[in-house]
Image (cartoon, rainbow, N blue to C red; front, side, top):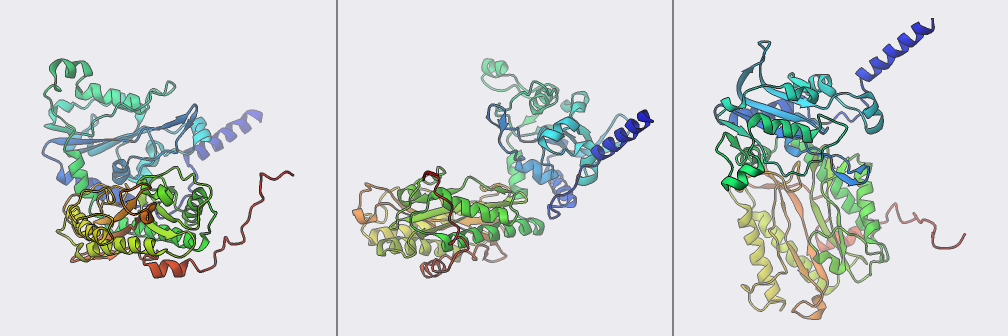
Length: 486
């Protein structure tokens, strides 16, 4: 009887192991979406070629702690697979397996492992990838070493070149490091020694240049399914800005403001940030990618620049608002703010398919240079300066700086984000010092114009000041002072 009980418990354990729980959100992109994206890429591939994609590596934070894993966006776009240690092949033409099966795509993924899943979370394994993601030719990555297709028969093997930044996990013989090394051997990837001796890689069928352009052509133009995710990410990010406007008080810290934004993101079930949050008060706003967010006591006289984006089901928003800490813009702050707003609105007017991002940047630069000259901050409109040191636009999607082509097309999603940054000790009147303003919004390119996606976040001086007068649910949220003795 004891043996029978053990036998049935083992069966139950294996049954539970074979069918991992599915207490996950239901609104991810469908397997049909990813299947369609693979088909669209296959159409674009050159004759007699294969495209190869590797999952992102696991990144170590320190000692035995890794960063939260984030899949390579191209890999996710084509598969929906969110785990590491995997490789995908998409063939232009049908291939024939040893058993006579025809296929035009194949994926190798990390296998189920009961002990590993107890520590680090559920895995799909080869069978889960087949049933949930619809990739019928799915195998565990331990099988990749035996995958003996002859890569010399292809005119081109397209992949992104390696950055040599993948760790070799000593207890896993089929991790990403091993997969890459096995792939290199299979395709006769040139060694460092051959490159250094010959001064250039040996001639072969390896193409590490063209896949980026092919993927940009696909990912730049968003599908209706993608727009559902992007709209959600944008709306969540807007609500973060709204709640911070209501909660803002002098004496708060940059870190606290960051926390409110990110709490709102999590409240709406956004699983990640699209990029590290930028919350810069006063002169900190002059640091374009300021992510320290350390300032503990924000002055009532300062502006605070807040550039944050929620990531929802893989897709990110990118929204910046700059607001007065005390709820009202000073005359100088208002002049700079409204100049940036005017530049953004002029770009919005002409933003349509056929334009380039460089042209939109030039529209904003003309407005800003004229305004800075009228305010006496620069002497002439063509004076070289660093008060507006960046372009005004980029694609957004699975990446905050997403893949996409230079000329704008219908159904692309971009930002328009002019800014003016006047640091301490700038060569202008002292009254302008420490004023940093960026206004960034997200736009969908329509047939003959654009749709302003992030209009939920107040953008004009009047609307911001009015929003900041409203009560916040956090007004009464006061924590004990931990520095005081018990």
